Image (cartoon, helix red, strand yellow):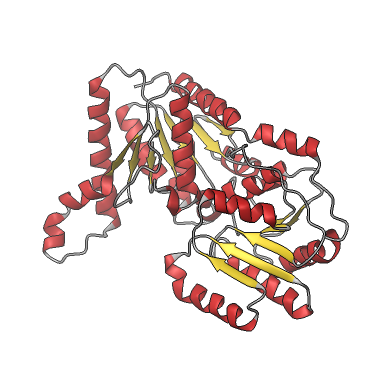
Length: 391
């Protein structure tokens, strides 16, 4: 498995990489993750059974002559060249050991690491599964400078895996050699089921963090408008802050804590049990994300059964079919998000009822770890059968 980052604290893509690796191991596969950008890696759980190899320290050793000469070491072309050399060498060494069955290469983020992975798969005669998780397609599919890389991957990979029907349709138009399948991100089914409250301040919650791509500013503006209207609401937001946007988010948080201290609470990254606790004690889950694949955060909220106001992105549309407690709006349209949130706060909360248990049971079955594990095992077999080789 080749990815940009592997530490789960970095975001949803990284959590998915770790989850998929664990599922593959539980299904009998031996997994090695090659991370291109991590500086360090710490194993969060002692039962992790897959290996992690960091390319960045190895690359930095090769770039030492330039670094010691105060020369720029961030040349993109040089980085991809060296990473390609390292990956080929490490994979060839792993294959030379023998005795571990056929090899399959999986890549994450089609327009960058997937591009590199596809080249190596062709050079090493390995089946390649290109995993398109969300941001790569939501952003780079419309980027004329990145589209050709994504097209190259889609046309040459033995199997392309998406996380929702829209992305499946978009990539199917590019595929020439392999095929496209959709596998949803699974969730922890040990989570309790949300129960409605009938009194007090309406509690809004969001675990998307603070970033442009998650549309956090759209959500903050909508809640600010509701507060100014006199609505008795309180928004809690937690998660990482995009380091490129630190100044903006520091000011945005400070402004609201000064003007409306009773309406906002902000946290940094929380532990999984703390996140679940916040969701279970809230009334509405919010996300104004500009683009998703199959959002880990929104899928967790769906599985808990809490009412949701979110943008119509990624897998949410197909997963929330016939869900009366889910309100969707157009991504990037601030007025639409505000309207849907206002209706949820002013009207839906008055007529609130428990989430339909039959619907919830069906959803949880679709998002179970066992369902995802079986889908990935089938994907491995399909890629090997289609390629006619399993190095």
